[in-house]
Length: 165
Image (cartoon, rainbow, N blue to C red; front, side):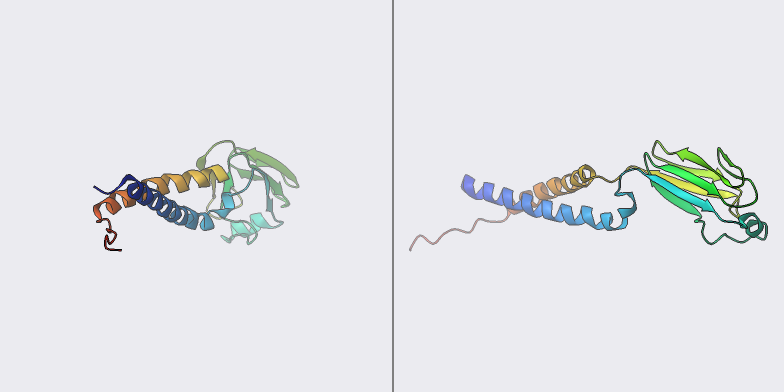
């Protein structure tokens, strides 16, 4: 049986390697989730003049996205600069006015919408990505990976020092 200090050294090295790999695995998706790595805020959606005419022709108003992503706590402020009243889910937005929609929980919504050609507007509300969430992801992936690496390293034979020296 190898000495305890060699086993502990392997364990700590394995955990360090596991945490490094966990950080890489966890942080790569973060590159693609930057839109939710922010505090809640007000987000404006402007319905441009002539949007109702474009929708009637089956065209997508170029300044209006088809779907939007939010974090919990955001407020969507819809401003109607069109000459026609519009509707977005529970919001009725008269011409030249605005309405607010607070987004208080994680959910995916598909609202009826009068300023989209398909009469549909998707809202995806996600949990904000915080430092705590990122650390949890690193630890959740890194610690089990480090333990597995340690278990596999215990199978490897210990290199014996030459006693002749």
